Length: 258
Ligand SMILES: Nc1ncnc2c1ncn2[C@@H]1O[C@H](COP(=O)(O)OP(=O)(O)OP(=O)(O)O)[C@@H](O)[C@H]1O
Ligand SMILES: [Mg+2]
Image (cartoon, rainbow, N blue to C red):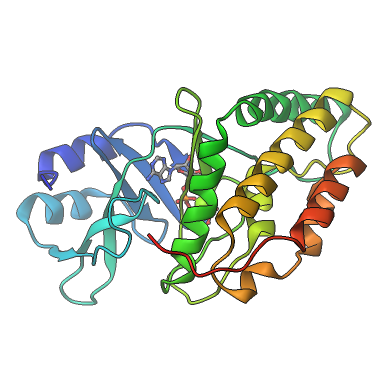
């Protein structure tokens, strides 16, 4: 692994961020991304410490092998407090699969949210079956680690060219997640969504592909088979909801082998 040098990090931090979440801001650094917690101020002192090599380099254990969860590869920590000042992470090339849509919504905001969701769903619905299998395989892999999914908006990306999904923003806690959590990462939850034939059709295609993948891969631990009422809330069409409910119980449980 070729590390980023100080000037590459500084130059990444001087650009407009590619993402801002609740906990950190992410900057593009070419081969990698740099993630800075909101608690860290990118000021003169920070830049100086970075250039002077004041921060400690701390390699992160490679738990995920060649999988890409946008995971940190190494951190730079403050030598006094041990606080992580920034992380250099694997880069994922893609767009978020879903977005946070919060009420109250104006009619215009709702129709814009629908248009964006439909555009993203078109991409997801045409992604190859293999992409969904990889997703279930990622879920199985995580069940055997001390990392878990944070099933919130913006924590999954899709590469529109390859149709491949990437779960990002893992949490270091042993908390096994299920297929329903993948639904929460895939679909945008639009409150009081009006009837929309295309939306419903795309939703059905996506849920169908996910369920087929889960059937063919099986799940590796029983907790992954817990039905998620929240997932049923996010699914809007009756047809897709039935598809999820009917197939969910039939997903085989078998030990996942690599
Ligand atoms: N490794 C990465 N490669 C590409 N883009 C990324 C990567 N990590 C983060 N991003 C972008 O930055 C956004 C926010 O990142 P992330 O979810 O990691 O931040 P967060 O502060 O933990 O957010 P939240 O807690 O709200 O989920 C993502 O939605 C994505 O667009
Ligand atoms: Mg996030």
